[in-house]
Image (tube, rainbow, N blue to C red; front, top):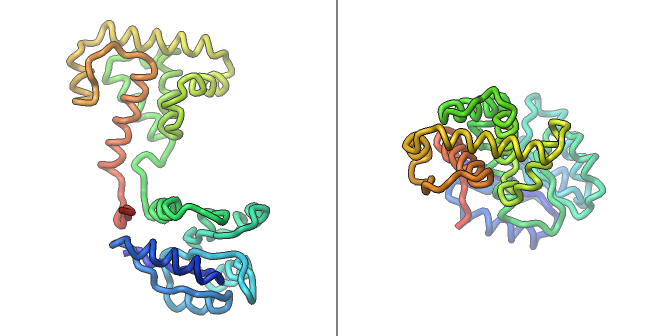
Length: 252
């Protein structure tokens, strides 16, 4: 059970947040506070898992609360989600060790819930080196020439698309990003990737590809966009199966 503490002097926001978060069976709101000093006392007594903290309070600021908690707490955990109507305070807030994320009012409650999940969610592919080597090993199993320039670019493209999956809908931008990272031009990168995938598809038995991706592969020729989306989908499945998320909340 994730234990949440809400701090805001706006009682309407507190009530809306409370009603929204109460719908989650693996989440419990243990306290709602409206002032800074009240927050410090209640936080130290209750030791919540997540503190949702407004910056503008009637007695002291949310930053003052964070500074006080940092002094009194020996172990600093990034478990504070900041709320504020003043976007210009973002830089100063992120200097505080306990702050995990900042939301500018008005904010999306579902995004807030996603952030709470992130705090407790350990991804199987958190480590960049592990992810890169995993992709390299996948392509080796699919009988790519992992030493070719095209495959190297392809690994970079898959890695980047997995980390930022909006690139799956913008292959051109993805190729531009890889070209920029490798200090070359987009034509060279696209041509090398296309050649690498075409070569694999030509010389690898179709059953190997089908068995690797199971029902997610429909048997068609592998374009660059389609192949990268297949691999990213595969990585998403592996991540979901192997990640640790003891308290996953899903808003219904």
